[in-house]
Every structure is written in C-alpha cells, then in structure tokens.
Image (tube, rainbow, N blue to C red; front, side, top):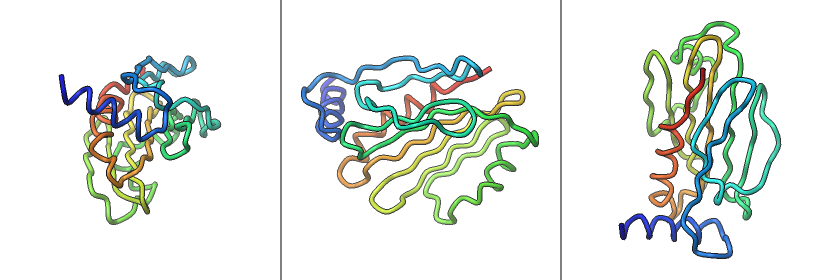
Length: 155
C-alpha cells in the first residue's frame, strides 16, 4: 500500500498537478474501432490532436509526457513482426517483444523514454504510444505504462 501511495505521489509531482490525489483511471474507447484502454485521465489532461487513423493524442499539463491511443487499418495484413520492420525502429531498442498477436518496444530518445505497443486483430491495428521523462521519473511511470499496455484491446 505504501508503494502505491508513493507511486501516485511521484506521478502527481512529476506532472506538476496541483494536488496530491491518487491517479484517476478511465476507460478510453475509440467508438469506430472498439479499441479501448485503461487511461490515467488525471495525468494526461490535455488533448493534443489526432493521429492517423482513429484515436486521440493527449499530454500532461506541463507537456513533459504524451500519449497516443490509435487504431488504423492493417491494409497489407502485416504480422506484428512485418509491421514493426516496416516502421524501421531504431537499432538501439532497450526492450522488444514480438508475438503473433502484438509487439511492444521501448527505448530512450534524448531525455525521454518511448514505449509503443500494437495489438493486431482482424483488419485493425490497435496501438498505444507513450513518451515520458526518463530522468528520476522512469520508475514512477513503470506501473502506469504496464497497466495501459496490458489493458489495450480491440475487436
């Protein structure tokens, strides 16, 4: 219980919100595709435009972290491995997991950690892309990123 409170406090402080409230979670759904994910709505409070396909971008109030939740057609019926290869990810990926149903990759770019997960179902690709500060905050984000990643689903 103590570590959950410390995580919530660290995230609240790191995103410069006004009060030390626990992380509030909502279910974000893209109606057109059925893509859904647990979403930390108390952290990502600002809309930041739309990605290609369907979905939404959000960022923290201080602009230090952002997230994209999106779905797009799998026009070429790519496997997760083939789709990822076509995106030409950087060679210095720190974490990479590819299965027949999804891929997840993560690494560093400048002073940020980036994490991408895409689930493949039927003719759609359901993705979450997250960028957040690496320095001193990376551990505080671990549980948040894990919950979002594992909750990502689509029809």
